[in-house]
Image (tube, rainbow, N blue to C red; front, side, top):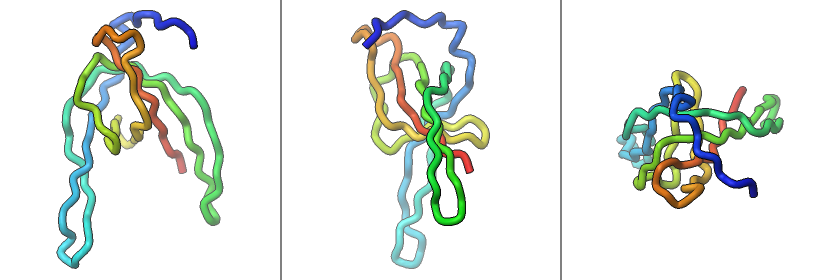
Length: 112
């Protein structure tokens, strides 16, 4: 693994909304999932890989991204980031140098 290089704070110029899932009753005995905004973050989004899959008659492309944000201790599995109509599903995250300054988030974005 390459050594972590402190990012230029000026590169954190993508505005993303951090969202957590909220489950509630759908009124018919089932569960309905909606999303609640947790925070608005400045971030750097860097595409990594692309993979194509077929789901029935449709072809879906999945793009993985490494997203750099300032450190926050409250991330959880199942959360996501949004930028307009784009959705980045949080896969994993880490504090690259254990300094609690920045976080590297591994995310996936599905494209129809």
